[in-house]
Length: 166
Length: 289
Ligand code: SF4
Ligand code: SF4
Image 1 (tube, chains in turn red, blue):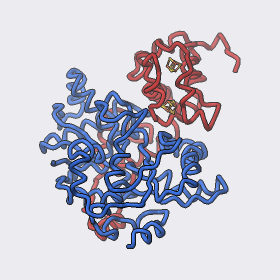
Image 2 (cartoon, chains in turn purple, green):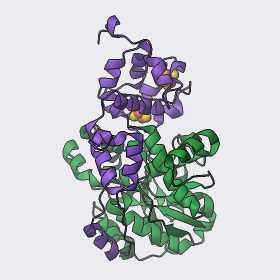
Image 3 (cartoon, chains in turn brown, green):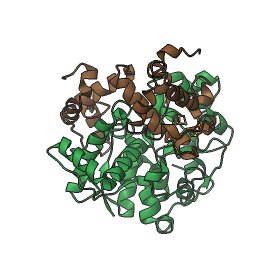
Image 4 (tube, chains in turn red, yellow):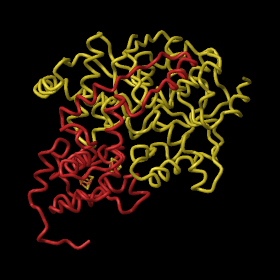
């Protein structure tokens, strides 16, 4: 990918560094340990944590935030455990995703999850059918009303991503 | 030993066999599990969207347990890492705790409880030696491959290093105490890929395929999971993986409490094996059930 100098945002790395999880980004000395052990990279060469860090440091804000790759991190923490500079890459990837959301790029699968959480207080509905099955196996009934998390998400403003309030 | 049982989203709907077996095992070994109706999702799914929201969700769950004077026992590893991490941060950062409590409004968390995965409770609170005393039907002649998964041990700084994520032993020891063999293998520490199943199914399935493809020729009686997400990947999606790899795999995936339960003398039909997706017919026959 050619770098277009006019589009570089020199402040991007500071934005990342001031987002929870991104604090240590400037410590990276590009050793590549993170990429070498990344299980997603093992499957798909295009996903490369070290490269993403480098792109952030260069200020390639749009490319990073619009890329599908930031969503591909499984949060396995392999890189975080091994990074000699304690960059905390897993949390850094989370920070990038949080920034992407703030800038309007949210992966559709998360919209579905937010909808589920607002309706069921969990990722899945626990329907009568499920409770009947639970009863059959001697498990207690579960009744989640689906009001608690919606209220929290209304308050932090993420309900809006699912077309909810605010 | 008394804990509030935190089921999370997946276990009570898609991992009932895990819950059934864990409750039975708990009863046998004197671990008192208390149900808390008001628990919700732990907060893990929204972490990628907004860390603050996930903190609020986690803190509310921690506060519910604290109000009852109980520590939390988790079954899902994603719940474990989310609740453990938020717990650690809120214990150490009083200022943030006040901000979070302020935002929670009607409930507050004071930082007084612990969060532990069911397996960690067995390993740490009870201990392998003590657990051994409960074994009445040792699973001699059985060979299992442990799957630790990621969030049971990582990030290690939130887990007080009760086990080493680069060379873990706790689940191996928990398998061995049942009388079975714990099989070592190359892809032991691989991530199941579950975290990105909804983002890129193909990449996620390829990740879980690596482990299954190695294990299929190892002559094991089953893969041992301690997380519902990992089980969905290795068990629920095993058919898809067989198709993708054009190979026959047929590896049963058990939740650890299911095999421990057998060793404790709990009848197989009380341990939820009917709900296992890869039918453990050969295993149950070998068991003589
Ligand atoms: S392991 Fe750490 S220091 Fe090395 S490239 Fe990755 S983030 Fe940078
Ligand atoms: S946490 Fe993300 S970036 Fe790091 S090794 Fe795992 S998948 Fe790769």
